Image (tube, rainbow, N blue to C red; front, side, top):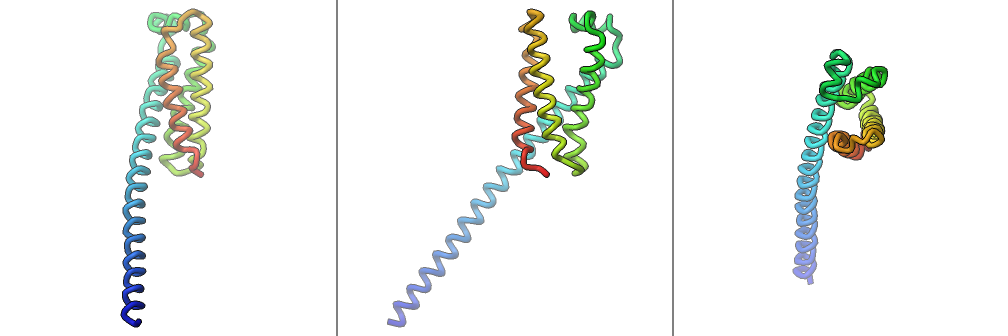
Amino acid sequence: MDSAIQAGSNIIWLANVDIFATNDIDMTSEQKQSTLLNVALWAAQIVLAISLIWAASMKLIQSVDQLAVMWPWTAEHTTLVKLTGILDLLASVGLVLPMLLRVRPRITVYAACGILVLMVAASLFHIARGEISQIGINVFFALLAIFIAWGRQGVE
């Protein structure tokens, strides 16, 4: 009888060890997945931020004549060019600095949502002008913004 109780307790002990070992493996897998997601989110944030900084610098520094060669719509909408340049610059800062400095990182989610709205508006603008071939980059940036907003939604 005592040997049966002892054997039973050994089985329970082995089962508990197995549970802990399984949890450690799952935890490591979750940590790797979390790390991979975080790296992908940072890559998306940096790519989008650099692209927006480039666009902002073009819109805010280049003359209207120079921009019109690359983007024909800019010749007719100089105020819109400057406004979108400022929005691009603010959005790029909002994508990176709050998370980097760990100061109100929720702003990164808001910036991504703002970029999504900006890209939808830009796409509609180009479609209305018959420039549907121009919206590919807007769609790509919108998808990056959705990914960032989704991935960073739990940050506080």
